[in-house]
Length: 155
Image (cartoon, helix red, strand yellow):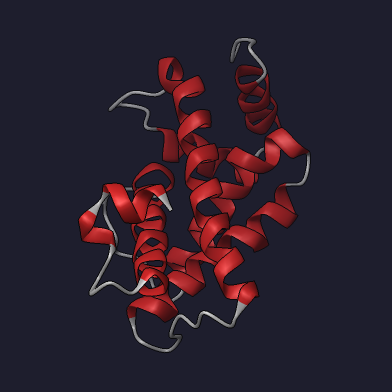
């Protein structure tokens, strides 16, 4: 509720459900900036796959469930696309959809927290998304990532 009252741009004509949908889309856009490479020359559907994989590596490492996190994050990213392209409309009666809006906010919060923990290990020369991509394919890279997320070093 705070977003609707503190941020007039989230109201969208006084409709709090549409405001929540727009808030979800903004959260997913911010998560994309953390999880994806800056260039978006992906094949159709590849952005969602990459988003899910990078989220799975970054967030699943914390929960020891990379594959489940991958599918969940990819599903949230697909919902973002459906909302943006008008294939899904927010409905106040659809509790499951409204719950997914909150999950987008939690995904962003977790991605920001993890990115902050890793900030000393990423740079312009070695951006976080490259480490996430390498960690998806290489268990040793994922072990380094987990070690840093748990307060250790990447060595």
